[in-house]
Length: 163
Image (cartoon, rainbow, N blue to C red; front, top):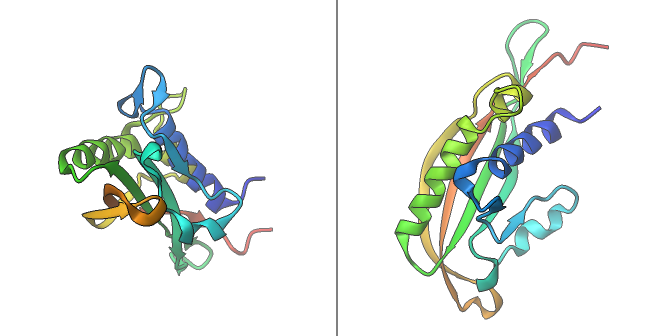
């Protein structure tokens, strides 16, 4: 059985990987993705090279369980989605983050259900602002990039008293 957090995180990747607005000729528009399926130690070392751009990372941030009823809890999983685009061109970052936003809500499985809703029972929520920051990345921090961040909330209903 897949752990609930893993299933939710993988649903986000399915939405992003299968959305036509993030494909060019059937291939992802992202040259590099940071998925952290196994090794989270790399989270502090993300610095995409020029050839990696555009790049995308999805980082788990936190979970704060709350009781809904006497037997059900909500475990809101907070994820940070970060993308990097080449140069300091804001228009490229705006175009990609818009398509990412559409993918999170519209990308569907074979049954016509959005991937995230199928995995969690709910649509995702955007938490806070989308930020755009000019930065330098890659070896010796020479590559100009726009770093765009979006914080995403996924609702997970859990019965912690179930057998």
